[in-house]
Image (cartoon, rainbow, N blue to C red; front, side):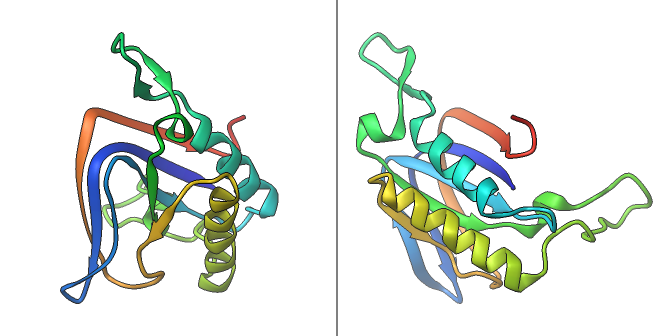
Length: 148
């Protein structure tokens, strides 16, 4: 699984002109699932992300985690994270998981994060979404469960 992690002051996701998920301070997670991913990958990311020390403390050093600051998470399914652009000009999405597998692991990831005590808002799986965020810092990281 691959996650693009963005520290945000606020964020929302809109589907068909309706806000379906919204957070204040926290993290926006764009989550991609590949064919080889399993529950172990979801567990790894769900246990790692809430504890990443990427929020500033009183000395303006990144020493605090999402849990430390009481932030929320906006989780968005993003199959295009597994787009292969090495050949031609159109991305190939052959490595992305099929929708059934991706949905199960996406929902599993969100549930595991909630079990960490984090409030999770989501987009709508498989829908066209507009994601709006104020990237704080900016801080953006990429985490891949295969690169431990």
